[in-house]
Image (tube, rainbow, N blue to C red; front, side, top):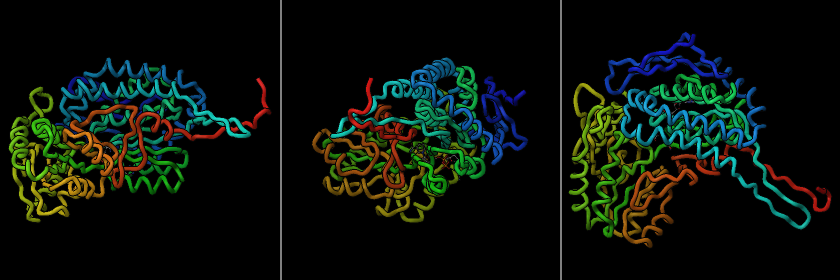
Amino acid sequence: MSRRVDVDGVSVATGHFINNERLDCAETFEDRSPLDWTWKLADVSAGNADVADRALRAAHDAFGDWSARSPKERGELLNRLAVLIDEHVEEIAHVECLDMAMLEESLRQRVIARGARNFRAYAELASNYESRRWDSNTTHNQVLRMPAGPTVVITPWNAPFMLSTWKCAPALAAGNTVVLKPAEWSPLSCSLLMDLVAEAGLPPGVFNLVQGIGEVVGAALVAHPLVRRVSFTGSPETGRAIGVAAARNLVPFTAELGGKGPFVVFRDADLDLAATTAAKMFDDAGQVCLAGTRLIVEDTIRDEFFTRFAAATNQHVLGDSRDASTTISPLIHPDHLARVEGFVDRARTNGDRVVFGGQRWRDDGLWYLPTLIEPTNNDAEIVQREVFGPVVTLQSFHGDEEAHALANSTAYGLSAMVFTDSQERATRFAQAVRAGTIWTNCFLVRDLTAPFGGCGISGIGREGGDYALDFYSDLKTFQVKEGTTHG
Ligand code: NAD
């Protein structure tokens, strides 16, 4: 009998999931709720090199059969999994809310359902792949996709269910088998997903889960000789370590890493739209890689923008993530709160001006007030490094060129936002700015067929649409000499 724990009315397995069976370890790690740090949710199995080896052998053994199935056959099972996710949105949303403190309403309405959508989208995309064909002088040519093999997926603690399914869905649809390792700060919603994997009837070994500490079991998974692809989302620091390990085995690796998005407002923008969208950078307590955390505003409208932005920020309600009225949740972990505080303290020491916020909301919780900082200059740490909390900076510019230069002035390049009513200005901005996604007069709009990823230290490679299916496949060119085959 595998170990399960009651998490506020939802039964959650605390072990790994390998070959469609639970595996418990004697060694465990504690998982606590950011809503109340005295609340221990679970003792979760802590994987090690032996568990990593078992999971990858299971994935290796299942690969032959799974990769030989047609995309349509695989798609039917993935669609069944999507239906089950939709049926279990309430429980998954509740557990993820308790585990990482994302707002329950938004998890229920949007985020968990996106997990189902990830599987549906890739079931369809993989089934409709049209192989490129062309004739040259002497040969008929065709590009074929070949499933790559066992794939390791490692994900961060923010939005763990959505981000994990975003990577696992294309890997599975492309014919790969998967070992998923979610982050140790929010491991529970992915465990619920595995109950549904078994119920949907995915064959044993196709989709496995390993729990544990990144530097231990994550590192063992990435370095394992049976791995054929590594897909990672997390910080640039861990991305580097994983990239080095993948390179040792010559395994292709994709990384979606941190961001420090510029949020650029031109004088011709709809200022209310820009200000209310800017205030959304505090949603999810700012723990969003895509957030535009550097507000860069044309000098002539700086004061007007600031007034509207401060008013929109005042509408935020800090509170318990289970309450529908709450808009700002606590941070994930005391260590993360200390990290955010460290950034703001160092900014003060540096002479940067804390315009509002800059402290905890209450002594007895993990909330941090929405914070605005005016840096002394563009080299300040608070401008150059990702905080991953409710902290944004405000700078002003004069003219398009300076706006572009400031937007491009960090080592990151994940997302950028521009607010203007000029199509021409927006297009110039999009051409000049180095980022994986550029939103004009909007934020967080996603089309799952579009490429997604980062430039610079924000990542390597692109996922989304066919780009992900290409990454999870080996592409081969099939050539036939003209006139040598019949029928
Ligand atoms: P992290 O890098 O600390 O950890 C991410 C994952 O890597 C965890 O599962 C962890 O256990 C594992 N890990 C840690 N060390 C490892 C090692 N040596 N080998 C293998 N695995 C290891 O990141 P985090 O703190 O969980 O997440 C926050 C970061 O993720 C932020 O920088 C954020 O911007 C980024 N992020 C990026 C995106 C994106 O799409 N670009 C999305 C969400 C989060």
